[in-house]
Image (cartoon, rainbow, N blue to C red; front, side, top):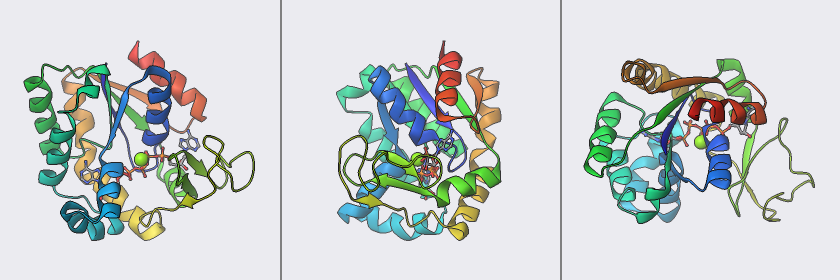
Length: 214
Ligand code: AP5
Ligand code: MG
């Protein structure tokens, strides 16, 4: 099964994608994570993307379509893909449709994760992730059981994203409403859209996604 998790910054796309990876063995393709890896590795793409990402704006379609196109060449995508944070523009959605068609892959469902803006700002400004395994945490909603130690891998260094501040978040939300939200109508018209309540508890959102995919 190949699905898209579509939603504003902080809606829980990454959180739910990781649960689906663990439960169903699907592959998570997060363009945000791939770009952050490119920034950390200091590649040419990383250099081009860093300032844009830090400000909360969108990286060019050309760059992200190139990254996804290359990633879809790997054999592991045959077991099912969760697109997390891609596509984000109509041009990216068209390109994804063409890429999947060329590879004989179907798009089974697009899950829209709905959430209100105040909740999104609270979520991203409190977010941190494990530097060892990438597990996501939140200062209020999801602290590690033992302070300073990752529940999953036991590592004790945590990362904070440079774009998780109120200024960049405002730009990210604007980019979502201007560039990405038209995809809701786009996929609705194609008959593949299902919506879940992203403000519910993490387990409840997981259950709603499972119901939407059945
Ligand atoms: P990206 O990394 O995709 O960031 P984003 O879309 O802003 O989304 P986030 O990762 O912030 O949120 P999420 O929905 O994954 O939420 P999470 O599960 O972490 O993109 C970053 C940047 O890269 C972009 O701004 C752009 O510059 C560039 N980029 C990436 N893709 C691009 C593309 N296709 N085109 C152009 N540019 C692109 O959850 C957030 C927090 O809330 C966590 O702390 C979590 O623990 C908590 N939480 C999650 N669910 C719940 C819940 N149900 N209840 C309470 N807390 C919850
Ligand atoms: Mg994410």
